[in-house]
Length: 399
Image (cartoon, rainbow, N blue to C red):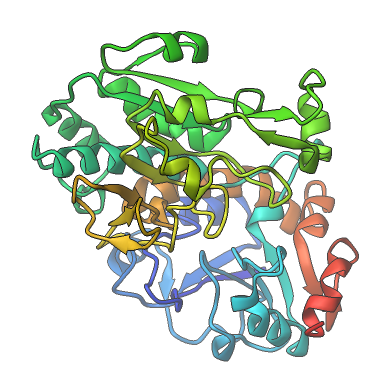
């Protein structure tokens, strides 16, 4: 099999890669029938020269490759007929902005394998950048605090060479009596807690968080803490996931107790929102910095008006008008809602991602392990939607 690593085409261009140069070399050494090349790209976090040093061919023409791998969506005009592609397509949730992409994939007889749906036999995701989203998201929350209150100036994560340099900068922060609430329990939340722990915040239980008024502390909330059944039936996580429309918000006590909110949870549109615009206008509403790592626009947090960017991560939310305003006006809430946070530490994030791809996915592609991993993640092939994603047909037809 011949694999090509694509040059990213989505704007702004992502600097991450599916495999590092060393991982490419190791894969080719491990599987004698595997050959990997890359398209030239000056934007990548790893230079073309670094790949060449590992004996990886750098070439523009990839027509002879059967599997083409990128990170973000490929622009429809760059898609090649009758190929297999692997990237984050953001089509399976009927994202309207990628409808043309999905239609082109079907029209060009392309097999689309989406990283997001690569799962093991227990339906657990195999590869994800989530840890790094939480990691950089929490770092940006602390950056926002320093800028908002003129306490310190943290170097942006994207200007740091790697995780090690970023961690060194955490020693520069000067935070006083800040309470942080964090939602979520997966990889994303785990990455955020790495930052908070290193920065010297103490983790406390949700109950103690609501009682404690002093010190730099944070708490982590699972759904049982921010949602309750509308009929006060005892909370059961499985039931909540299956019937989120039966639940109502119970997050507000934490919004009245915390200064900073880092949102790392998965949100189902059928679930209750965490707060409303009127909730945010209450006199007891305390949050003044919201780092929405999940970045659900028009979702559970009214202040997430849009996705911000790596170069311009902060904007303000006017509590009075509900409109965007000055990011660091003390009358506003400072919002961070970058939707590609792992791109700020691309070398570290790519290394973790590629390691899981190499160990758990490439063997499936090459037919030396469970092929159902690829089948479950295939959204389209042979000119039509796959069985698992047949529900997208109405979306594909524009209905």
